[in-house]
Length: 235
Image (cartoon, rainbow, N blue to C red; front, side, top):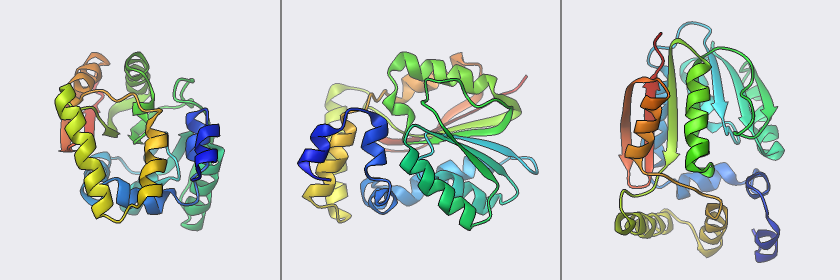
């Protein structure tokens, strides 16, 4: 992404829509613990899914997490929500090519969730674009949209628990990304998108998930700034 393009970007949707075609390839380099991170999210999203489960993917982007879940549970039906139409178009092509039942919904995470009751509500690297109040509100709305026994999984980018550790997480992230093969332009593009980040520490978010009424709340995986948070709704 050029400097001119970056300087003209005003919204999250524009930032991610601009890189829809290359996002998945770069994500493997920029999400520096990619395999373990997504494996943990997929595992906890699919542990107890019923047959023909309904899955809601928030901030679905190009559909990567939905595709991974469908690889384990091909009988599931997916609703993908994102604010960037180019991302949803990419997701639609990938899911259609694999014969996965799905629909896409162009919507911001602050908007009303698509109507329905879901067996799993998942998200990957999206909710950190909301401020803390927005995160808490979304967690509450997600809990209310879960079926009894439904699971919530947020594979998230989190803040360090102290300013020093947050700065260290950032420093180590860039070093690891460059070791993975990210060049100056890719790191600069990532940092341009990170201008929209409003990360929160893991422990704060676990508290908000409990406040939303979820049980079995835990951080089931964390590697520096990448964490997988989960909880379950039980009536």
